[in-house]
Length: 288
Ligand code: GUN
View 1 (cartoon, protein in one colour):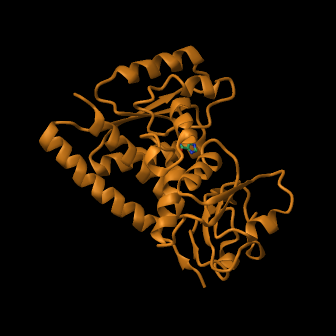
View 2 (cartoon, rainbow, N blue to C red):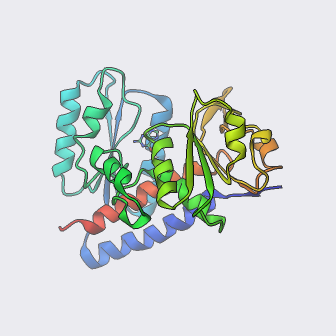
View 3 (cartoon, rainbow, N blue to C red):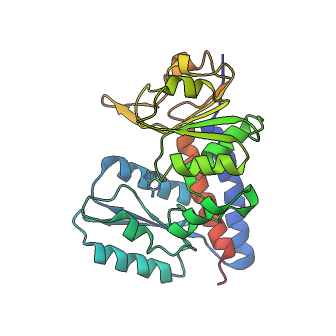
């Protein structure tokens, strides 16, 4: 029976530490870290995430500005807004909640965010640095939040990443690719599997560390898990009215894995904690 990794508790510890740091920044340097969260359109899940992020800022002493925009906002207008936030002294972190409505070019918009305020780590400069880093200490200042949270959860088990077989299921720019790069920087042997992968079961069974970010409920079943493995479930799938499930068949998988994250209460809270951390670090580096 696996040890359940309590992401909620680990995230809370990080948030408590950040709260202390924010108070110190205010007292000693008169700086209040500030985050702007831009939400275009009415995606219900995105609304929930942005509200959670703003609430977490409030609880940590970080100034937050929610910027809701209509679904039909022209790209030019969105980019002008981003340019304004790049210049705004109160704002140390800018996040554009994804996905954007179809008429907007996500890549074009994200590259207008100042790389020095890119607390999501999605700017091509920060993604490029992530790709260039051979070792952990060469990583960019801003690493994408969900992947950074996954690494913290793996490390919370006390299991050494170096030299382990790590399998990442999913190849998104938000999770799959960056988490693979982070595992590589920690010197794991990394395999990226995805929807076209053949023999997914055999590949997953090789994993000492299995990170699943495919967006398919119960994609990973107990027979795909190596006994004793660390299983990190990034999936957030809504089934029925209220229930949230991950990409891993949790009830069966916990009988085989050594450590496993639940959904909810695993990776989700860590994403927010890492966003707060990136925002505080950005404020620490600010000159004003
Ligand atoms: N959509 C899904 N995950 C994320 C995230 O980490 N940041 C942003 N901005 N949008 C997302």
